[in-house]
Image (cartoon, rainbow, N blue to C red; front, side):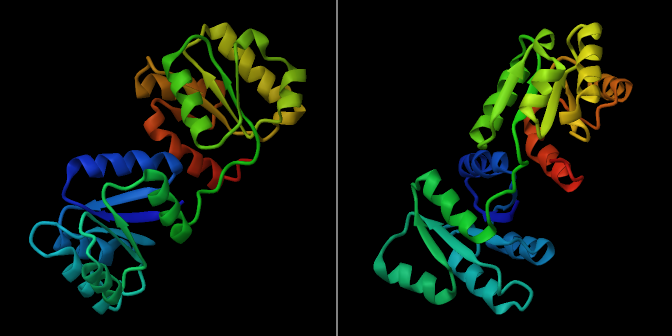
Length: 247
């Protein structure tokens, strides 16, 4: 997981890049102008700065020069993002100290690859992710997000869960929809606790129709280590699981 600072005044671009980087597990800090960007860089020490060159007030090139003059930020790599592409301007950017130059409109894949060459790719949990759910929009969105992040995912109904299945899956994490009927939820948690293949496996209680308080109560009642109420929380949740030693 990398910490990236985006200095960009276009709110549409900011939202697009949040959708590009955050599902990958990266933290995207934002600033709307050069002066704000310099302050954020000094405070947060990101691993990478994505610098729009045409921003209000201080020009992106000037902000780049100031960042490279400041001892606390001069070692932070900067990639320029701009519609300006004249050879003279590109040379000026490289002389100022950028490590890369990407012309707008950019290919998201190329930008992501360029950024991850600097900050690295997020670490993934080793193994398949198991989702126990009924018909649930959140479960579908969760599965899609995990698949997009490169995980192998198996989604089962509670009735399909068995000790043999859990042994075969060897899941790195198990998500259980606690909005299912109580008997099914309890059965799922009992199976996960009993299976040798899921000993020590993180179990996450999730539900789209419960308040956070109700979800927290259900997680505590069934012994889930984590809880999830929205896919927006997924990247941070996976990071916490990884830090806790989850497989």
